[in-house]
Length: 345
Image (cartoon, rainbow, N blue to C red; front, top):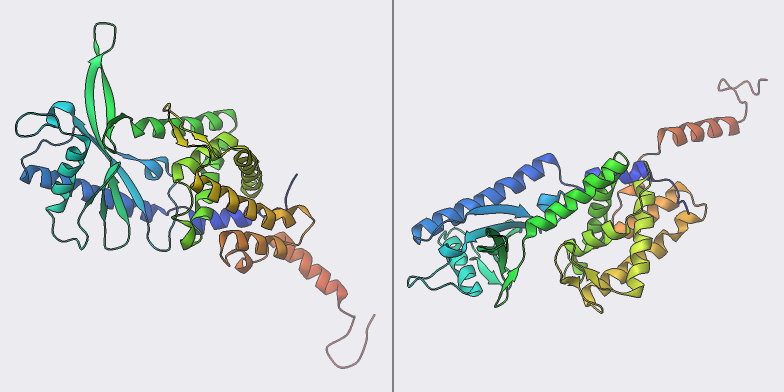
C-alpha cells in the first residue's frame, strides 16, 4: 500500500543528514592512509615483514557509511600477511593472538595518541582523539593444493584463538555485485537499495543509547538486500516497504545467514537482532499514519519521530503545494479594497 509521498523530503534528508559528503569521504580516506603509514613505520622499526596487501572493507568500501554526530566512525582496513612472514624469531608460526599483538605493537610505537592500540577478538583497534577508530583485522595468506596439480590462496582471519577461513573482500564484492545486478535490471534500482541501507543504518544510530544494543552494519545490509522492495522515484516508499518485509521475517526468526560464508551472521534468538526488530516494529507503528490520508505536516512529524530529528518539519513546502495554498488563501479573501472605500465588484 502506498504511503504519503515524502520522496522529495526523504531525498534531501538522505543527502544532508545521512550519507557522507565528498569531503567527509576524503577525510576518511586520509585517516585510513595515516593508519597504514603508522603500521608500516612500526613494522620496519620492529624489523618485521610488511603485509602483502591492505584492503579497506566494510561500510567504507561499500559506500554505506553514514554520518554520526559523535564522530563514532568505524573504518575497517584488512591487513593481509603471507603465511611465511607470520613467524617468530625461531621460525615458528604465530598464533592468531601473536599475529594481532605484532600489529598492535607496531601501531603503538607512535606515542602521540592518548589511547594505545588494543587487541580485540577479531581485529586490532586504534581509537583516535576525534572519536573515530580504525579496526585492522589481521589475515594470513596460506597456499594449499588446488586438487589439479597447482596451488590456490586461502585467506584466514586471526580470530579468537583460531585462524578462521574468511576474506572480507568477498563480502564487499557480493554487495557491489548486488548493486550492479539491480541496476542492470532497472536503471538506478541498485543505487536506491544502497540508499535504503544507509537510511536504515542512520535509523539504528539515531539514538546514542541504541548503538551498543542494536545489530551490526553487515547484518542490516544483508537484511536490506534480502528483503529490498524497490519503488521507482520513491525512496520513502521503498524504505517503508523494505522495513515492513524485514520486520515480518524477523518475527519468524532472528537468524541471518552470512552472504558468502557457511556460518551465520546472527543465530536465532540473537539479542541485538531482536532489539533491531523491536525498534523497527515501533518505527512502523509510528509510520502507520502515512497510510491513512494524513497531511504533509503529519507525515513529516512521523519521519522526524522515527529518525529523532526535526529536519523534516523545517523543510519548506514543495513548490506545487505552496502554489495551491496561495491560490486557496487568495480565493478565500473578501473582495475588499485597500483604499477605505468599501467593496468593489
